[in-house]
Amino acid sequence: MPAVTNLQLRLGHPPHSVDKKLQVHTTEVIEAILFMYKALFPTENWAKTRTAFIHGDPVATLNGGDYSRNRACCEMETVFELLPPAAVERYFGLPRKQRRYICPACLYEMDRNDDRTFAIAVLRPKGPTATSLYCPICDCEHKVVRKDCTAVNCKGNVLSDDDSTCPTCGR
Image (cartoon, rainbow, N blue to C red):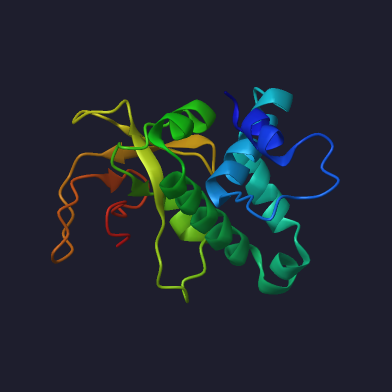
């Protein structure tokens, strides 16, 4: 049963009052939002739309574009962790259990004062011969080459074709 229908059934029609025992979990709310977005805009990318919305936020205007990219990537990583694998596949077309990498374009646009890196991109096609990295925030594929990262303790074997940045460690 779709997330919205489950949520509606639990809330009741119309919700004049709310049962004190009612519990609505974050995951249910996120799935309901994604379900409605996909129903209303089936060909559009929610992550890209969400990023544009964050960029237009007054806080982002004060902090600059790098804030928007950090926040969008952080939210996307959180959504990937909260949703079950089938929901990630359904709403984003990405296998949740596939290894994720740092998008080189997002890394370039992120606030470098924030030490966090967000791994949300996946290799396409999945496998040891993949030559591109897809990022749902950018909604595009970035060329990669199969070379070992030279950073100490990094086991990455994929580098950005543009600037040799390692999408595993971000160096």
